[in-house]
Length: 110
Image (tube, rainbow, N blue to C red):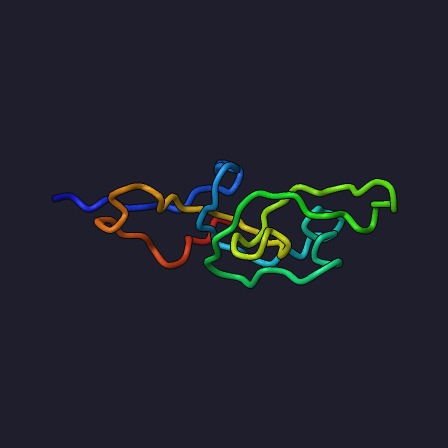
């Protein structure tokens, strides 16, 4: 039986309709959605995380009458209120995943 090899993919190709396994890395960029969310709360640790696409309350731009939201990746286990900065994702949701192998860390792609 051939073992399937799983490979890390760019985060912009990730599905947004289900939780996914990702590699997170803190971003030093400013004026991004991620940067705004991290200023308002904590952030996910670097390394492998399970995240999902979600909506975060934008407390800086919301008013008493209208709550605005920012869409971003967040930890799947805490209602998407801990922002994460995934840089790569890997699809481990296939039925034969127990037969496959995956590297523990994505290769450095710049």
